[in-house]
Length: 510
Image (cartoon, rainbow, N blue to C red; front, top):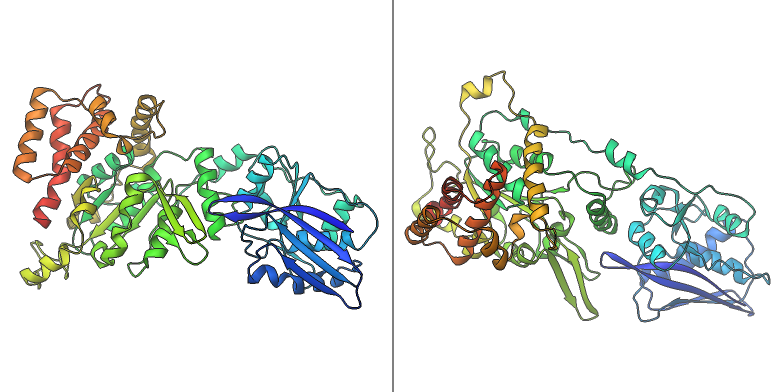
């Protein structure tokens, strides 16, 4: 007898439906054969499945069970096929018809029959909905994540026996309900706030501009000036994620296994801060079974690279494509995978190896050669892709000891949201909604200058030897400054401030 159930395999950030077929035929001793391009974890499922079926007191006759995972040319990875394989094998041991074509099943089995959570359930739920499957059986811990997708009834199961009895109609399991909007609103909170930062008013202004236009930012300053503290608070002034953005970001984190199952899905902007020893594959993504890297985990959020020159130069250079295109393509012999990677890059560095070059209170111990070598670890093309360069000085003692709090993140975010709303209206027909992502044609259309502003920009280009890319970046930042001020066109003051944000790299790296 042949029985079947539907499950799904992960490919990149998406899922593809898999048909689990089981053929049972008589033999002297029990044998389980799994075909359909399974990896080691799938092949090992035969041991977990037989133990779980026995522990659940379900009937499994002797004989050969051939398990086919179709399509056969799609590689199947991970333990998420345990539950559908076990259910189909038990059904194949009986003569009673087994018709559950409206159901998609995923779950890892313990030896005692317990159903354990798996990765990528949100992507699987989206695929089940696309294929017209109305029921989705998932581990109990994954139910809140799957219930984010409307149009599919999610049934949480705790063990194999419960899943079997439900499919047979012997018990009723109420579908898991999640009020997406209420859950979304109740979990939109951060543990940090900008009012905790003393001083650094110029830097805060630059961060506000960066958040308003989704611009990349580089902070340069000696140790202890608050660069990391400031970076951690950038998500708190960015606009709240929309539900679509939250689902996109959650898919990536679910597949990577970094999702907090207690919160179901991401409701705040991702903030990723990898160590400078990270590999190329760790940052960009990849591996033998390609998975998302840090640039993808920061999708719709902030990627913070502290001690930027300490990263390997080759590692930094791989970011150039995602910074321009907003996605990462990983090619292997078996095919190519694309991961989304639209993030705000925030980097921090010291002015020299010891960190005190230019400090009026502490003396630098580095030689000119050491300083030059340290700064040359960052390539010019990468610097050109960073819109704002800002100096972070030491904070005065009077500001540190002052009891007065600075502006709250909520106040700054309100101004940022107003500027973003202007951009959303401006780019309503485009795929993007921020000034930083403008194409050259859009720059020409939306960043027109009067004669005074054009004169300032021409002078800066000649004196500071800016590249053509830096020219466009200045115009994009100036457009954001005008949006923050509610101005229809770019003013001379906007151009001058935007040029100021590009001048630090010329002072440091020329």
